[in-house]
Length: 588
Image (cartoon, rainbow, N blue to C red; front, side):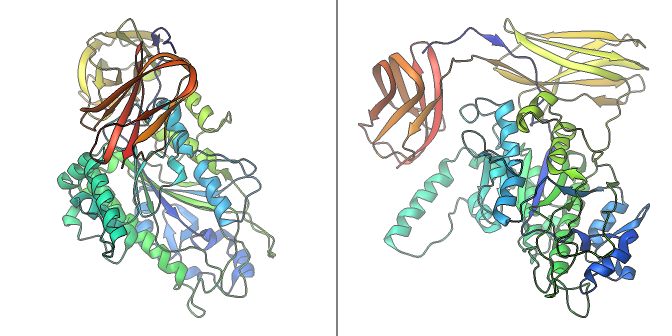
């Protein structure tokens, strides 16, 4: 087991670039035709679904879009669209869609083709691509994702673990930040379980930063605008407060509590503007409206964007039970100050007299929407996207407003070599540019100036460079602040550079986990020589250490021969060349 020479890594964009994505999952399959209503297809809709169709006079109008409106329960989302803070992507689906809730949800969360089964999520693979040492080496002191309202979602599943810090309910979140596990009935088993949960609450790596962000964070009007009877709004209230409190987490996942699986009684028989579907849409609209208002009032609106998704749509033709059955394409909503305020796509083409087998045509592959988010919001490279979407290329959709720089920035790259970072950027069409301020960050959020390069204001291509040799850690984030002579400024995208010691072909797993009094280190390749194993607490203090000599083996077993307080620890595995790998474990 030997280490390869030190390699320099060409820069890549980072998921941690100061921007935040909030995903709202609608479970059950939303009826898009009664949500985003095609007024220019109203005759076809009348023929297909007269028993549930929203009266044309009740449809909420959208600015500069006479052909399209919204369900009358969505007044807050109408206001956001008309204020330039919403983009609606129409006709989103994929080839050969599944009508099974379980399989379709799996496809949407993993980003798979209909005939492809993936064990990782689309955001999980982006983490694998950018942070290959995750979770042994964490890219930030804050979690990469926070999920509230359900079990851990496959969307954040990496090759090694799920990257989401998950709390299954709003109540559990407040129990967590108060350090109090949920109350259980008083039985011997539950008392032991409560004790274990208490240890987890006290020792989990992220408990401190999340609790601190919750304490520091604020909500506009102290959160009183969030309806108490709206579970989605209460989830988003927590998200807004954590963002306000400075948590650097780039991804939040929340879940709509109502089902959109409206096979029966989707609307009231007499009044189609009310019913179960209207209730679900009203809850969604109110939650998004108050959340966006909270962000705006606190000045956080530029760094956050939100999106909705569900596993499929409903059929064009309604059924005889005043409902709709499983269908294909859906509309997706993006909201925030940085979206392109428009309809992406056109009204769906519908048959004059739809049958039960007719479906809404697909306009956009859902993976193209995901690729747009990763490229245009998180600024990932095309090379990164090739790995996320398994060698499939997608062009961006006009979901986000373009960031106009006062100069054409042709490229911004860098590499780490000989204990220094070298940055290079190329420009053209410089116009009244004063300088380029080079900024560095340890976490991708808080940046400080480390140098200035004066602009030559060339109309043709010009190359700039900057060297940074004042390095104290193994990775940094860089960006360029482009300063105009007028004093105004803009920023480039963020570049992540890492100095990594790459070890040939090794990964170590600790089995079992949780641990009682013994464990096995299972290596991907055979190992030889002295192997040292340390158990350290989350403060880095060593609590146990052992050494064995390996002779061309895959596995080594260790017995813990001293008492260690139960809790969460890190097992570090070393060979004769130095630090090798680490894994978080629960010791019982």
